[in-house]
Each structure stands twice: as C-alpha cells, then as structure tokens.
Image 1 (cartoon, rainbow over the protein chains, first blue to last red):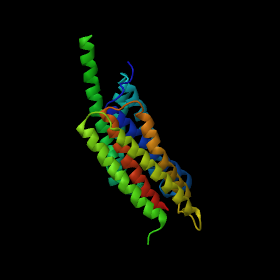
Image 2: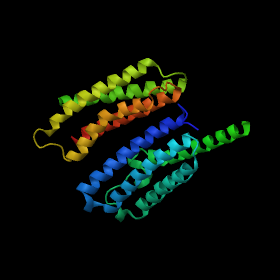
Image 3: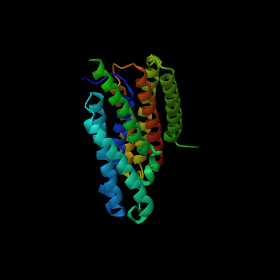
Image 4: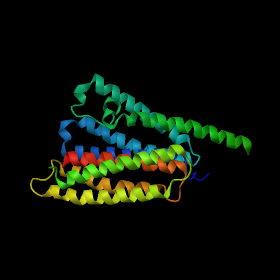
Amino acid sequence: MSAPRSGPHKVLLALYALFTLAAGARALVQLTTQYDDAPVAYWLSLVAAVTYALGWYAIRSASEGRTAFASVMLWVELAGVLIVGVLSLVKDEWFPEPSVWSDFGIGYGFVPLALPIAGLLWLRRQKAAEVQADDRS
Amino acid sequence: MPSVSTQITYIVVGYAALVAVLAAVAAVRGGERPRWLDQMVWMLELLLGFRALAGLSAFSGDGPDSTSTYVGYLLASVCVLPIAMKSIEGDRAVWSSAVVAVAAIAVGVLVVRLEMTA
C-alpha cells in the first residue's frame, strides 16, 4: 500500500521531525559542552531524540499500511514520557537540569505528552480504516 | 531603543503568529490550501533570512553565551519552513494547511529562543 497523499499523519510527521531536531540538537549540545552538570537528564534527552526519530519512521510506515512498528513505538514513547515525568518529580536530584521529558514535557508546552496520545488515536483510526478496506475487498 | 535584530524579531514573531492563525483557519474551514498562504510562508522565510543576517552581528564583541546553541537556533530558524513546504509539495489538501500552522508556530518559537540566547 502506498502512502496516502494527505491526512493527519502529515501533521504528526512534521511534529516528530521538529522534536527529533529540537531534542537531538539540545542533547548533543548539552552532552558535549555541559556533560557534568546533569548527565542523566542529558542522556535521557538523547533517548527522547532517538525515540522521536523512530516515531517518525513508525508513523510513516503506518501511513503506508505497516502498523506493527507504530503499535509498539508509540506506547514505548508514551511510557518514556510518563516514567521520566514521574522520576523528575520524585527524584529531582537526578535532574539538576531538565531533560526533554522532565515534568511531562512542560518545557515544550506538554507537546511531548500529547504527541504519543495523538499518534495512538490516529493509529487506532488508521487500523479501523484498514479493517474496513479489507472487509470491502 | 531595541537593537535592529530585536526589532526584526518582533516583526517576525508577529508575522509568524499571523501565518499560523490564517493556516489554522484555512485548515478548520476545509478545502484546498490557498495559494496566498504559500506566498505568506515564503514572505515569512524572507523575514527569517533578514533576521538570520542581523543575528550574525551577535558574533561581534563577546558573542553569544553558547555559540553552538545560538548557531543551532539560527540555522533551524531558516531551515524549518522550506523543509515543511517540501513535505507538503504536491499536496494541497486540508491537512497541508495544518502543517503550515505547525511550522509557523515552530519558527516563531525558534526566533524567540534565538533572541534569548543572543
């Protein structure tokens, strides 16, 4: 199945690309210039950047009909935001500087928390549309 | 009186907000992405180019606090819109207007961050 020309996935792809760039650049700058200030937070920002890159690929694949990877990846991303968000609140000594997912992404207007939820909602709709298409054929 | 780059920042942020609102309205109303929205995006890109050129003046004197962060914001501010427009090339459906709205918000935030790190 080829990728549909348009749809909500285009907005998700734009947001995932933006966050890959933002989190990746931030993590690389912090890891290379201020490593000793908050190594745990900076490594977690790099993990977030890699997750966004994989999320971009997962949504791209799902838009072409291959939904398996996105079904795993978006839950992994949501778990990451929630775990790091909780850790940043209960273990604040690990986060002298914030990571991308600290306080559930408050530094980015909570978009990191909303993104995997929006992705999972889109994926559910995408799977339902595929089932309908299979039933018709 | 604010510096020239700060004055351009005000104009860019205001114009980016206008583009974002109009793109969001176009997306909500449905239908094809209007041609005038594309023209507004490229006008915004031109303003971002002026802001980036003015931003080079930050390297005179002591320079920015974190050169790598500043250069990152400077480059990202001029790259986001062309990449976003490339991603919706040949797609004029309603969701392409939403992509423009997201990109316009992103460059607005980037320019504010650029100003803060100068």
